[in-house]
Length: 92
Image 1 (cartoon, rainbow, N blue to C red):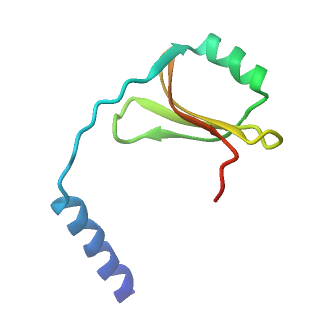
Image 2 (image 1 turned 120 degrees about the vertical axis):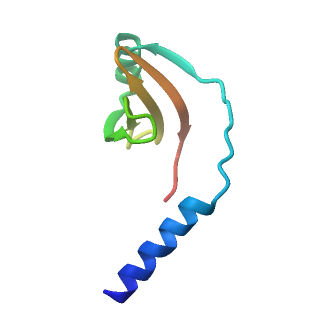
């Protein structure tokens, strides 16, 4: 229990004392319909999705094709999906 309390204080102190660096990065955004067509072509399947607490109004989605190794990471809001990153042959 003591470890949990100490760990919590460490995380809180890091979050509150760390300098925030903002970077603007261009991303490509498409309609949900266009993304669905492309994902189908790549035969990627949804592996993970979750509400993005940083923005309060978007969802993060991770798609992957286990056979080819391709993957795509999206941020979605309303009817638009933006490609945050994509790649091939990831390793964990």
